Length: 422
Image 1 (tube, one colour):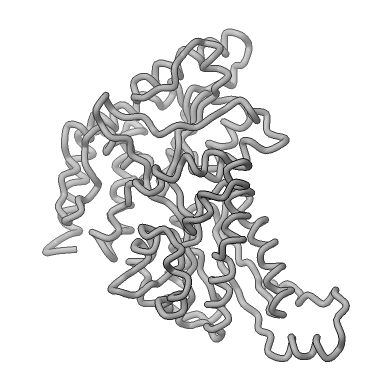
Image 2 (tube, helix red, strand yellow; image 1 turned 135 degrees about the vertical axis):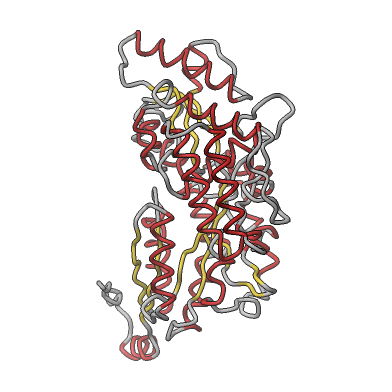
């Protein structure tokens, strides 16, 4: 494992330098990231290193959240002392809680600054197993310039979006942009498709993958209608390759100017609005569409949080690092530079954040009302539940069985998984 050199470039008095380095430790933070996440984290860690004399290395991970979780399980099951701090997906707490330090006492002086729902999501059996770092609730990104050009309103239903996507895609291709697509999203078979799929189904009135009480009712006509709708996009308004798209694949197409609509997380806003982006100033975001008027929009609750490993040899320093990374100043910087919705409530009301990322204060009610995945209901079986769900959705999108057939199979598999109880 590579280690960054301890910062020694500043000129300090010899006695002061000895005092700082005498108790210095080396920490490792594992940090799966997309967009500018690692770049901003490194800046924050450099300031922390200068302040404390400790060294912090970033252990990077692949983009796929599914692959990240698999590696986390391997390290933690082996009780590895190599990782001190884990940046963990919001759904990870109920599954890996036994491996993390209870942060309740260590954060008692600051926890009331955090969005209550974010704290609740990381509290397992009364123990705070991760300190919330940032939240997420996806949006429908759209090319406002193209909607104006074709005199189309911002769509409120999936049918409206599909129709508008086709009209604009065909029009732009007729004018010479053969690479234009109507809609891009996360269609690869991984956790990202679980997020997309549950949004489609819930927004059609098809309920949850597993209901809050642990019951299974996913095999219903509304859920089938939602998946059939999504299947209709593949090869028409969305490229066939969308079946392998993750977040960055979708962003790449949209940001290059070759998609009318995109479903993606909040991080993509800062990148698409960057100084070198071909779509800077040409796009906006809105809530994800609904199945029909009167249905509820659904945005999956996302976010990543910081947990301290029970197997860290430097738990005290790791806890202080977690608190430092989640203080007001760092959350404000993260909101401005990465457009990640904060977990410290006051950041939403900061005028500099509103000026730099105006959608963040707009998105506060969306984040606070986002749809959680069924990790609380299914506990340690969530990964298997999610895998069965995204497989059923991906099979449907790929034409491997109908929505009705795949939902019936999914229902049977989930009931077997549940057995006598989650």
